[in-house]
Length: 153
Length: 153
DNA sequence: ATAAACCTTAGAGTTTAATCCAAGGTCAAG
DNA sequence: CTTGACCTTGGATTAAACTCTAAGGTTTAT
Ligand SMILES: [Zn+2]
Ligand SMILES: [Zn+2]
Ligand SMILES: [Zn+2]
Ligand SMILES: [Zn+2]
Image (cartoon, rainbow over all chains, first blue to last red; front, side, top):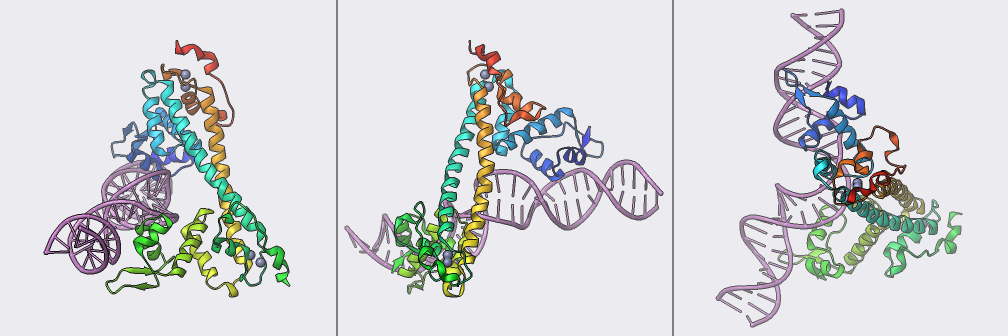
């Protein structure tokens, strides 16, 4: 049996987090002491491990609640359900990944065109790109510091 | 001069969003009508364009406030400041990207080992991986459905 | 003149995952 | 028996970027 602080220490999380998980239906201690302290047993600990692993692969706490509801009733649930959750999450992650990759590409191209010097930003290529009316702002890389690259002097 | 709904329509955003940007100091209409309606001029419109472009490359509204404060005082600000903001953001984006890539890899490997069939999840490889005590859960791909791949029947 | 569409405000709600706080009860050591 | 570490509760706060609501005033078209 672990008290809340002990279990938290075991997994390097805060006691608050455990109370939070409890409030959100992810993990309840299997018993309480006479004075009301939470007491977690080995099964609770395993369940926490499950939660933390699921978090580590990108599931939200809501997703994890779904996973746990299957986990505790495995024999009446199908592989398809589990795989569905994983695949849905994978799609979400890949969508976000695509967005961030686009950001990274744009930011790199913005960064590349700017001299980064200590002088006036009056004709900074980054600001120009953000101001400009045309659409190439992002994916296309212009120079500008090719034409004022000496403004450092 | 545009009223709030007109400007919003022009950029395919909600009037609410414009009020939100105003409340957060990003964009205020240059005037008001007699009856208190917001009136945006061409400069306001350009500033909004700037904001939306910055958003499109991954900047948060807070970042954008910083960018705008440089933009309006360009001649007294340095390229270095602008590039600094871009590079900082790029680092953040790349950190997030790495995390999501890790998620994607793990999710793919989980998905690959699971048959996704309609039968009992009692020995679903995904659940097993999340339960298991060993560390390979994520990056390494085990099979399990190789050994129970027939459970569909 | 009256309805529809649009505008005003302040403030609450959404999502995610905690983290922090205050006021108080409990437990082990000295 | 008192100190300090730990526990209890409910509720507030954080960050991000909106989105929505309520209760009411304005504009436009018929
Ligand atoms: Zn420069
Ligand atoms: Zn520059
Ligand atoms: Zn299966
Ligand atoms: Zn499976």
